[in-house]
Image (cartoon, rainbow over all chains, first blue to last red; front, top):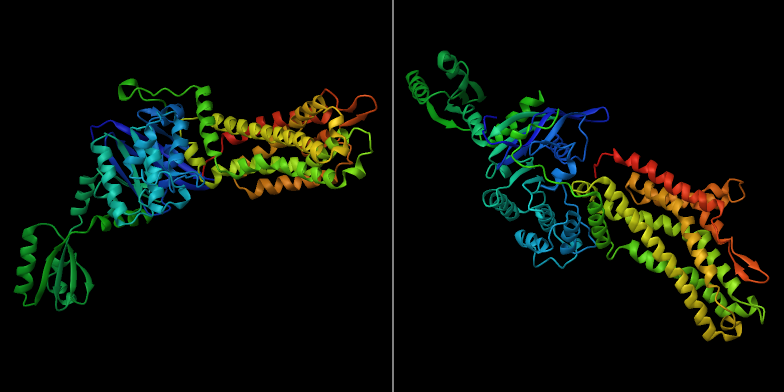
Length: 309
Length: 281
């Protein structure tokens, strides 16, 4: 990663296996300070395992975890005082009210008493704070978990699938909150998800994990550049086969998608013009010619498929 | 791989809270979490059942038990303590331990707890202290209710003669202390079992099985070494002295020493067993 910001979180050759089953292979996570790092991958790729390793809940089989430049294994309790985390489903005591749930963690962390009301305010649960947590909806539970993670005003936030169970409005709210936490409060946030669409609007950096290996890591612009490299021309004509056979120089590398549809890698605008002229010149009907940009979604799928081979 | 050099670290290493601070914070959180729990209700009400049973017996059949003119306190105490000590007390400890640990398991809160800036030692000791305190509260409530029941019988059944004889307070205090010691062994074993399996059913099953098996094994010459048998051992150590009335030895019996040994052994072994555990729930 060609970033000058110091790395707030770094893993070196991080490997983990569960019994005989390997889960992570030499993962080189690099999270610059002040970033929102979208940690992406399909379910079961090793995201939650990585998050647990970053908190010292699991012991790595090999390699090491560094937070704020210090090795986690040697300074776990000290480093955790600057970290807030929400791992998978939030840990809530159903027999306690929302307020008491936050209060329990506040006491555990030794944070000043006024913080409980403050974090409930941040996540918009002040009204519901006196109700038992068992009556909370999935979205409210998620927000209560986030409130707990924010208690100590941590420099680093680890959020594992924080939009799980949220409705579209909840997802937008969460996105706004993450942006505000980074922009106004200077937090570094690692947020994992299996959907790139949830991340692309807020993330500054992206790591894509597939089967325990890092398939891509870099800034969001890096990922977008990768995407432009994969743009294609879609050509619609009468018969795709005839068309390709008549123009081997221009269309030799094209893929036949349907009876009348061809895909070819896009190179330059001049190439587009040349193809159009050639098809018309060969006396073939040109029904359509357009440039298609794969979505980030497709790029993401492409990355995770490649790594699977 | 070692720590980065100081120039690479842009943040001073935060200071970890001192061990005693960690323990104090854990205790403050753990006591809050007791609110409205079954563990707390069990503690407050479990002592009432054996006392209520014995109270009913004396209320309706006291005239057949107490010979006129004799001291009713000895048989009253022995009956109550044996009712409580045989089955109820060991089962209470099994349930209490499982319920308390289950508060975290049910909330899938272990992962949350261990991601906080408190060490595993503080979490371990804090819950143990809460457990010891609840166990003590339950025993004290039992003794208090017992005295209350005796006082009530003075009023409603004066013929039984509870008011004409001194309350054997010294014996009660010694019995309380020795019974508490007798529960420690099984409490520690159940605590470790609960922490290790992180379910409610497994520790309760193991505990109940152990209590029932113990009753079958009471004739065994090594029965005094089974921690689940110790409360019963203490309950039956009450003796009737012709001169002094009801007495109990002012020292720990062998089975109580074994209970203490189980307590220490289970905690040490359990702690090291649990240190390296991975947190998946």
